[in-house]
Length: 218
Image (cartoon, rainbow, N blue to C red):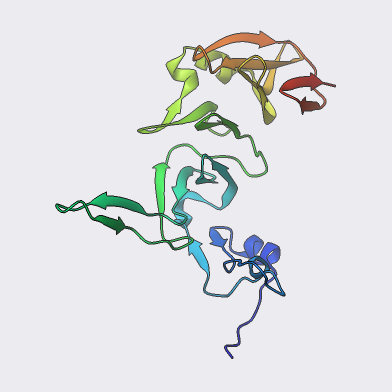
């Protein structure tokens, strides 16, 4: 029987902030769930140049990761099928849990403890407070929405506090709650159906609840 030691994953991650650990595969009928087991060699390190990992999130089966000064995606069970000249299927890639990581940006990231990302259909959106930017994933990597849609000056002048990104499914909007103007809290609103910033709300959003595709603020 192979013996190996177990780590307290939360404590271990706090010590090595650029490391992502993964568990064993789970199969049906196990006495002890394998996804609770983390072997010492089951990890993937990202580039320490860009700081520690600040967030992980899955959107449309793609696992994204944020560091303080970078953003990328991780390969999870990555494989694809192609056909040869005889129309036989050939599998490319490996089905490993974490085989590699790819950076989509080494300019934009996410500040520690912000957790400002929100999933919208096939993309994810977030606030990079340090770079004063509202961002989204794109085919070429990352798009700075503030610069593209002409609201960067508002972001530069009014961004404050810890950002929250709130999706309003009913109105096809994302509210970026991290702005202050004349001592009042504001939310910059992006409508992802028309692909434009459409409003600035003056609400004091203490908390909010998403319920049956409707958003209730408290």
